[in-house]
Image (cartoon, rainbow, N blue to C red; front, side):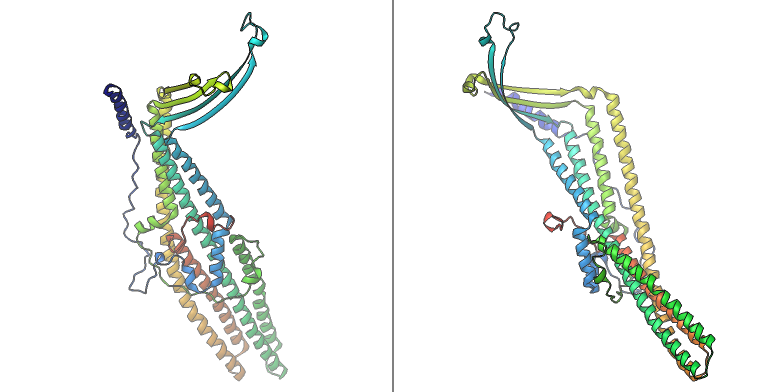
Length: 484
């Protein structure tokens, strides 16, 4: 008994030992860049800082239910997100299929045959004797013995590719929400510019009426009236382009949320106050940025996949062993098909000799080495680009905050100047040119302030986008998908 069991135990131990061997380099996560903080990182002593990771959806605190509803709609119905989701689902399905490579491949076959042999095949036999039937059923199994880790490295590469596509999905979510929020804030900015231009036009119309009244009473000249009328016409000329810009942005918002361009025209046409945002955001450290950015995570996962494929190619330097088995029944009649004498079985051990073609194998290894080098360069480029974008976004937000503060003071001062100039004009201490100049200054200040608020909003969105903080980075389940 022992002499029959012992060889089997030795074979099993040898298989287990060889199965632990995995050729190719083991992947190691690249080190973070040796930078402790960003150059334009705000100081906590200047003003309180908001942390992007503290709020998973920062726009909800703005109190704008329209924006919140639009973003929720986009996350479920945007076509780019749905495409990225489908790519992830496909990769996940392929990963499930790759995992089955670790197990035997099963097959089943059944065949019934009837025929007649030729007289030359069976000389001297009657025609009826040359007729015959044959029935065959079999179950087969083929198992690649993964002695050198080719299968395991392939699964490792597919898993890393799947994780990369999951991060791609998160990156698309970030990009779509950022684009929608940018379009929304720019639209509200255009609407605010329109409202301010309209208010200034109303004030200028009152000034024109006052000038015309004075002219009728023998004070002033037609020249003053024409100049005032021209300024009013120039202000009114600003209204159609601003209205068109707001409408175009509303079309973009609708498409980003998965709707037809005109679907939200009526809803978004109602103006709302421009939101006020925190003046400073704590970006954290560059190392934290690397952990948050989905594009960097995707590049890192693809580097992992490229490294694993070196192992897949290296395993081709060694023979590939397959273990096969067959069990079935073969008979000349249905009644004896599963009888004792109809049984057939076989066990095979196959060896693939393609490893002897060393030149081609080493060429494939060199190709995978080059692919991994390119993936490393792509990862490093993604890291540097992320740091550059963050530095730029921090700078833009800081300057936008300072610009808005200065323009707020300018708008307030210009409004007071217009009120004073009207009183002085009515009192006869200044001429109409001074009033018109004051009104032009207020129109310019109000317009620049509205633009500045929109730029500050988009700068904040840009910073949150570069930091990948405050964004719903998740892989939605099938139950939450609007199109399913």
